[in-house]
Image (cartoon, rainbow, N blue to C red):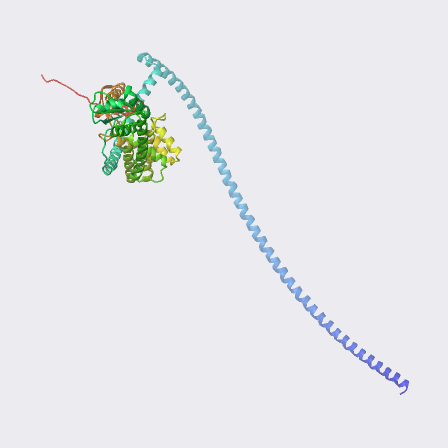
Length: 512
């Protein structure tokens, strides 16, 4: 094929391609023109609709503006009307206030005038009071201060009288109820704890088989009796008493050791200084065992647990200790029982009350050896062996050395008084007994208004007869309290003392 044929074919292809391009361009331009016409039509329609919407909105806006303007004008008219009404009310109030101010000013002027008149009258009244007071002082012979003192004294006496009457009524009602309950509790406690009492003394009597034994006890030139007294610390009294030797000592443990040693010597028959020392040592061991056994038996009897072994030993020593003839260990056991029973009745701590009751007189076991009261010694012993603080408080409070702060302390105090005050529980020497009675009557007679007084019931009650013209019925209450308080402060005594004040008025007339 020739080259020109290729050229011709290429030219034909170019022509066809150009013709296709021109055709597509024409078709595209026609579509574009048609689209532009459609867009113009849409734009015109949109513009038309927008104009219509704008006109509608403008109309609506104008209507809304008109409506708001109308409402605003109406609101303004209402506000103006309200302001006018308010102004009228304020004007009326102002006028009313002006009238009131004028009335107040008028009243103030009237009050000022009245005040001036009152001041004048007060001045005149004060002058009259001064004149009357001066006249009264001249007539009565008393100054204002003296009259005031007399008035205060009379008011005080009337107040004391009323208080005494009220106190008597309250105390009587309270005492009746308390006495009834207390009697029931104490009666029950005593009924459940009945113990025998045997009076004990500070001397022991050792029987002898015959009077010849006295010489052997004394020994050659008194060497045996001196050896025995030196070894035991006890005085041997050998007198005309037939077939008996008296051992005298305030320490009951030493006295018991001497009694046992002397009985062993009498039974053995060999009495000389060396044998005396041997028997005294044996007696000490025997008494030590008895002390331990007595303490353990006491603890077991009352049911107290965990007690220090040294306190148990001190308890055992009280077996040989007496107070006003009463065995202190038996007394302590009885107090423990009584305190425990009463604690159970009133809902207190039974174990604490029993323990404190057993230990309340523990100081008496060594009060011959240590200085101080048995209360202080007992509290020190309890502290030393780490007893409960409440037990220590009960020990310190059972004789009111400190004020009882717990119910158990009060119960121990009451149990101690019950045990000591029971008939036959304690006894005193005649001299001490007489001195106590005399002191009771002396204290009672020292009060103003007392006519006579009598100590009765073995010194457990003092009856005071007062002068009726000096002491009223109400004053008897205060007088009984004052006498009881002074007895507590100035005297020492076992148990309690009842103060009974008696006032009576007798009228006597003779028919002729």
